Amino acid sequence: MAEDQKTLDLAQIKEMIPHRYPFLFVDKVIEIHENGLTAIKNVTVNEAFFQGHFPDYPVMPGVLQVEALAQASALLVIQQHNLKNKPIYFMALDKVKFRSQVVPGDVLTLEVEIVRWGGKISKCRGRALVGDTVVVEAEMTAMMDYNQ
Image (cartoon, rainbow, N blue to C red):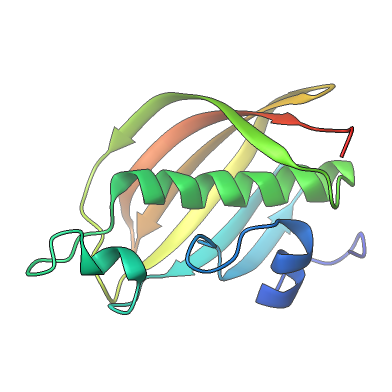
C-alpha cells in the first residue's frame, strides 16, 4: 500500500488479512491516519449468523462486533508496520463494553488506534458506532507471527 493511501477497498483488505466469508467483518477502510484507522461493516439481514442468532429478532452477536474491531486493528497494525502476509493472533481482550444492539440495516463504523507496540505484541483500543451511538468498545492485545 502506498504511504499516502488513506483508504482500502475490499480487495485490498483481503490481500492484507486472511479472513473470508462468513468471517470477514470489514467491508471498507475509509480513513487511515497516523495512529488510527476508521472502517465500515455493513450489517445485512443476509449475514449467516442471523439464521441462528434470534431469527425472529435478529441481533448481531457481541463477539462478532468485537471481531470486527479486531480485524480493523489488524489492518492498522499491518499497514503501520508493513506486516503484510504475517498472521496476527488475539491474545487478550480488556475493558469490553457492549452498549447497544446491532441489527440488520445498521452500518458499523469501526474506529481503532494503536495504544502500544513492542516487537511482536500490539495493543489497540477500538469502538464501534452506529450513527453517533457507541455500540461496543474494547482494548485488544495481539501477537504477530513473524515466522510465517
